[in-house]
Image 1: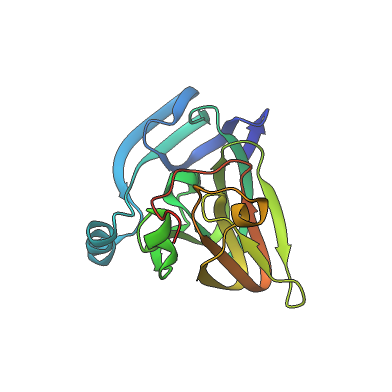
Image 2: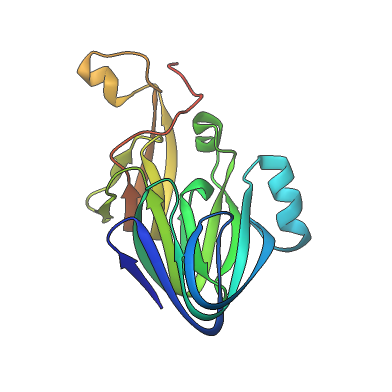
Length: 210
């Protein structure tokens, strides 16, 4: 069971089961635990090839045992996501931990990746169980409905879930409206029905103004 200790430490209670977590994110544990280094961002040969082609790389470890294991990463804020047979799309750098039974893979995201510098693919987590995602500052969860699409700055995007279609748009930036320069002239537009997770700070991108 996943639970938060404050907002920046994830506690996972295990009774012989396992979780997959970002390599190096374990900060403490009690009981008996075994650790195994794995490859993330996709499973099997297809996942390996995809990671090499796209750069969507994630080194994870499997933790199995009896007791409680604690995870954190650079004092990032942590949010818990409950999946019920659905799929979560998340930037690999923002994924902290998942139930071992959840399937991880990669999904093509189009030109958006070329602008953000995070590769043309993003990590997917699918199945029934819990996942923990990270953000730089408290994440905001925004609802998208057919009546209300959402435009997001690529540098602030963390993850999304639900029946959403995303389109990459260029030629306009939030800073343009503020009379400022130096930012990426890109937006991600989400349409449909679902949730989008954004953080209150921007990761570095390589898109630049166009």
